[in-house]
Amino acid sequence: MIDVRCICAIGLRGQLGLNGQLPWEGNTDPLFVEDVTRFFALTMGHVLIAGPKTVASVPEFAFKDRTIDVIRSHEDPEAVLKRYPGRRIFVGGGIAVWNVYAKYIQNWDITRLPYDGEADRWFDPAWLVGGPLRAA
Image (cartoon, rainbow, N blue to C red; front, top):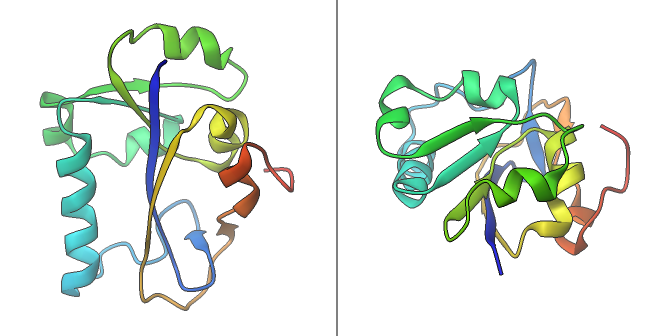
């Protein structure tokens, strides 16, 4: 069985994104910094597959200690996952990617951050049972 996981953070009401980035991007509150640090610690040494916008937001240092692969929602997910036999694979965003990969993710690691502001992208609870409720 392939080890497929997702690690993400959401706001208090399920907020995921705003104008192409995390709504809390740049927040220096320790809880937000700790979340980012934890993300990079847990994905270190593993595979991170994500859409092009998500991969573009990954800092340069992260490419040195994990395999990062830009994927597209139209690619065959089983073929993508088979590229990494025996590896732990983290599925990064965005929404179109999670809509396709949700049914393969065995472990959702979701941090709920104390953010209650604007968003234009939301976490879809249907992903937890393998599929989207709404279109991307």
